[in-house]
Length: 531
Image (cartoon, rainbow, N blue to C red):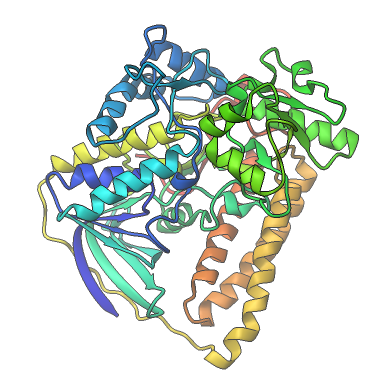
């Protein structure tokens, strides 16, 4: 196998990985790899914006209070206080890097949107394509930076660890599948930074990009790191319901501008379950939609924006307006058909705000991490903010470290016994298992859960894991199998965490335990060891 060495290796090219790389490159060289292209990331799909208390009527304390309410008692309060306090500074960092957020008509102040769960207008945005514009700008800076090496089509398949006597495992690097050559490469590093994003593709319906398969979570778990709260998958209330646009998100910002969720008769049904109506926290809105659809048998509900003119909607939400127009939906004259979909994992690899995990030399940033900020339900537009905060702090921490000599360890050569002639015939089995896992998770581990369904899911996933293990032992390395292995691991851990939480809290709702209990007000920890 080809072996290389790097000081700092980042896995993932979303906002967390790019912002970390740019900050780290001020003092040290950094290499960033991604499994497909550099632009293939959940960040580019983010429409709404970044939350920060920068208006004269707002304060970090108000932002923190809203975050705690949304988090349903599971947020780490000290973490929330630090993130909301530092938010304005990180926004200043982006502006200094040349990011141009939307301004008011007076051109002397930033335009601030409002989303569900927020008591103030505090969402900085770039129309309705904030993530795409932000990513494009930062990627351009990274591509010009001589201290940043960018490598595409490198799929991280295994963390390389060493376990000293009577010590926790130490991360020494990563095995990488070069999808162009179909060969395994080894990159040793002083530190590895996971910034691989979420795991929405574990579910049949999701707002995530097709590569959001929880790779970083699976890598960290297999290496012995501690994870938490994987049962807390947030379902976004509003994805476009259309056969040609199953993954297209309808931003919460529309509801921030007065959009109302209505049933087939035009009734504002969310108002019946929460005083904030369509701007209630996401877990409440998603369950209200799920209940409405189950009770009426409807395939979707509708988001009404017809109180706004076409000119306003096209200017404020050009991406959504034009996409709907292309599908024959004029959102200025008719409501938008929407359904919930798996959106954001509130749990992940356990870290502090500097991204440190329970394994030495292994860091984790962004949606892959569980810092304690989001609790049991993420407040809208706090996700990109968390990427900025943790990436900045992680880079600062690493800048203080003196560079030791990169340590290498012995690596076994991969074995491959299945010949190429058999390969194509067996791929259909892999596709079937992939589809089965995603349907199983949607039907049994979705917005509303029960012990019976969770136990059925656990039993079937155990069998699937055995089948995958047999494939993995003799099948040539392939990205489809690596992603299958990732979603199977994440699915199994999600079910185990869900069975452990014997209550309903935030995005986890159980028919068997419908109440929130003080005795269950704790993180669901799995794998690894504490810091």
